[in-house]
Image 1 (tube, rainbow, N blue to C red):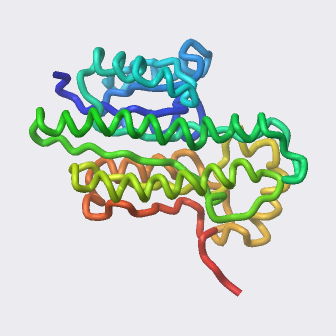
Image 2: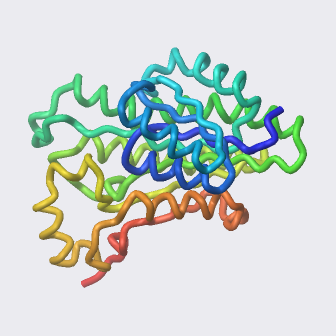
Length: 259
């Protein structure tokens, strides 16, 4: 049995996922990093950064939408580390071309739902089953599952209806998993970022810069992947152990309703 705790992070090669993986490595977690392409330049550059903290690094190639491959991926991680202490369901995509909701196509809708909703739900189910078993085998084992959603879970964006629906669904999934798994000793949380400066938001940077300064973000700045990672680390430390099912808003106040 691996003596160090293990964090499984999806979408770990860049952006928020990368920051989370690095931060958890700094907290003493070995990292199982899931990405579609485990030998990409981003993943290859992540490995030495993780290992420089003294943490182990295990890259896993998986499209989370391929639920038929989840068993193999989890089995490989357990063969390597013998445990999973934290699952951070972070992987997510947006349509390559943003279209008005009246012009959306079914193929794009299904693709976004597969990565953003179906994949995370079934991966969490698979990992939760292992966590329940591991709680009976290990002392001082504090498993948790975190779903990374978005402010779009409660914000209408007609040119991104696929993302809105998928993130709203994932938000409810986090709540239902929390309800079911607290009795198993597994805390589940929702991490809800706002406008975070990543490659995904870079496409509309000028537009978002203007909106931020106009007050859409009360704190009037972009969020960073590290802002999100700090919340994950705080949860991983057990500082919110009596807050199962809580939503942690990392949005600079976008959730504030004001007039």
